[in-house]
Image (cartoon, rainbow, N blue to C red; front, side, top):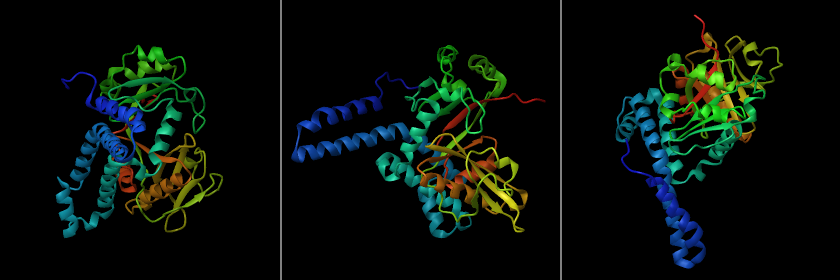
Length: 345
């Protein structure tokens, strides 16, 4: 528990930065103006490290742990010695995400406009983004009463970053959901259906589902540089399997050794800025790295088309998590929340 009251260190830093930007910078010139701009940039870096740093540190430590390492020095030594040469895809993913994390703090502009696309997508898809640190924002969105990517209505969707949570509900249901007093800890706990939260939300937003599902929400602006593994086809192509038919756009398909369908990726095009990827691999092609190559290939196309690729999976699906990591979708500590039908025994 933090013993310090508001304003937080981040808020104080933001206040100083805004003072320099709005009042000092316009009133100076020459050397003083230059150093004022440097100070503004430094304060921006401090703000981003205060906001992103803890989650980045946790994700970095976990990534190193999966490699059997405890520090970047250990990683450098393992790379030099060749001890991890049989896990180069994983090592590359860790190094790439380490560099991306540094750039997210030092200068996000070097990451391109992928982060801007992500924020635009979440603002559009949810109705608001981001939430302030520690805040749970409930927002009404017309997208919760209209058809989604597959024509189905989803009256409750939430996304949680390490800082805050945004819950998207039908317009007019905001106050009722807020009266439930949903704290971050309860929303993101591992209690599952045992606390009745799914039933409460379903009654409040009018959804048929009564099970609150949680999982890992991933996104990428730097997919892994893996070799293409498939070809793009319209869903109307007779060779496309039925599970890919609902996706609203063409699909990516890989063939097995006999030229038959072996794996595929569909895109849930939620809006023009965010496309969620889903992958399924047939038994015959599993263990060959096909899924990660397909996901990385699809992600590159999504980025080329001006959107950001996202990848969602259940926490109890380690195979999907492994594919995501290898394809360049790191676990940044983000979660998704959605109401589903209750499981029947």
